[in-house]
Length: 97
Image 1: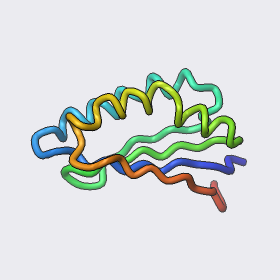
Image 2: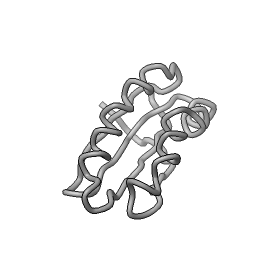
Image 3: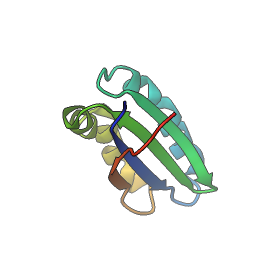
Image 4: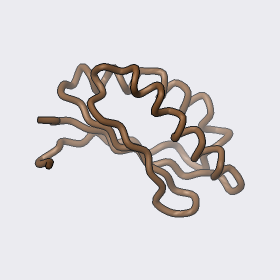
């Protein structure tokens, strides 16, 4: 079972919502190259709030993702696209279907 996860929330700057949406939709291609990332989802919460949820079997996989290409690209563009720092939480998955 998938045991570990990440939940990231991103607040887009006014006028940058479309760019943030495009960024996270395109990031799935990078996630597909990460064999230790078991599942990866991007979603929109409201007009300017977006999220990413992903799962991992091991802490090693989660750490690799946190130090991978998506995180690097996000941090390189955060000041330009986001109104605040990304809120990234490590989570433990209690149950799944």
